[in-house]
Length: 221
Ligand code: 4GN
View 1 (tube, rainbow, N blue to C red):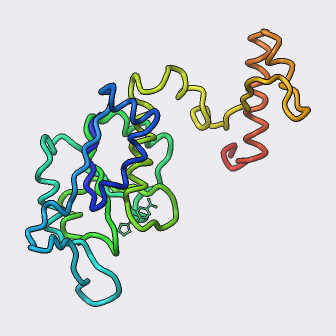
View 2 (cartoon, helix red, strand yellow; view 1 turned 90 degrees about the vertical axis):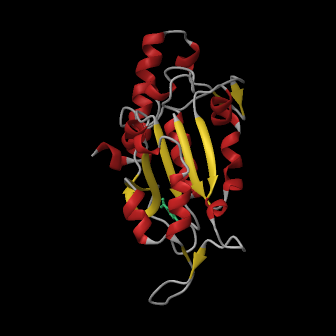
View 3 (cartoon, rainbow, N blue to C red; view 1 turned 90 degrees about the horizontal axis):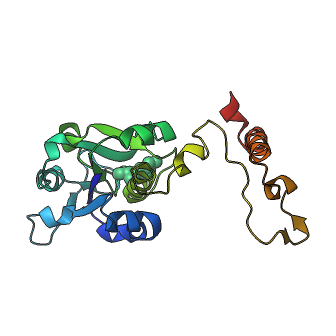
């Protein structure tokens, strides 16, 4: 999977160079290119924004710098362009799964009051929101997309991790335990020490259902 990120703040993407996603990129399972929209400013002060027509507060990112940054991307014709915005349709695990089947995604991150509508009409294929709240920029949502999608790319996780987890069967995950056997007077459930695989499986199914009823009853409807 190739991710091209159009952003005014490429430095914000340090966190996804860590841990599993960082390793996935080093192994060549995914490729993340950060494209600084500011590099495409023709202004001598590298200005990228301007006052909104019609008045109002804040600044709007100009269409030309966004368009030129998009045009700099190789093989953009075959890529899907996603704009991260609270106006988009809300991201779900099923949407993540279907996006993971694409080969090339271009993630457009806005800031300030947004981006001039005309360039959005021209280049954006899909608008996605990570939830009903407003952030200062689309960078964190773009990282959420990269992280969630990358987990479905072959070789990024050790097998089965995505098939058994929360949401994959519309239930929350069963609780996990590791050593020590007793911690603060709490003992690991006996069944998990029994070695009886069928009973363990049954116990985990029951716990998954119990957790869901308790914490997210809306998922059962
Ligand atoms: C996306 C972007 C929230 C989301 C954003 C979200 C930046 N906030 N819920 N903020 O996924 C104006 C320009 C606001 C882009 C946008």
